[in-house]
Amino acid sequence: MPRILVLDDEKLIRWSLKQILSQEGYEVDTAATTDEALRLSHSKSYGLIFADLEICGDQAMALYGQLLAGQEKAKIIVLTALAKEQAEQTLGDFKTFLILEKPFVSENIKAVAQKALGLAREDKNQ
Image (cartoon, rainbow, N blue to C red; front, side, top):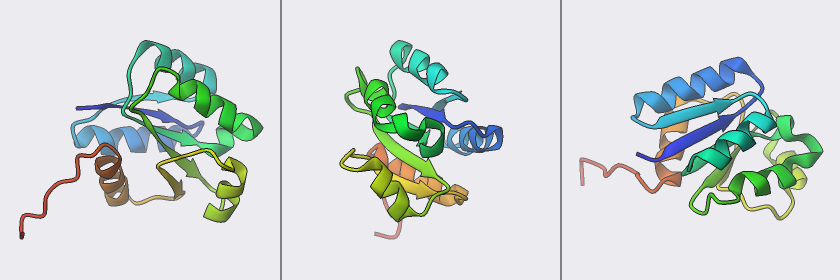
């Protein structure tokens, strides 16, 4: 199973995402700061990174670039309390897999992670 990194300064968000994704069988690391996330990304390989846009502030694109250095297969899902349009303006041309507005629903997180990692489950009714 691919490893997932969750970067968010809100403890409840980190805990919730770790619980939701761990129950699906993913190995999940969490980071409360950008420095912690960078340290983890230099020592481990991730398939998916959930990153809070607000924690990164004006440095978001530089941080995302650093997080993805050496993480060729990783996809970034941006978490934000902003409206999607505002987040898109902040991100500019930076390519993300998805912008996910807070608050989120656990079922959506599971589906998004599966899709991002190419592990979407087949419909049993087909």
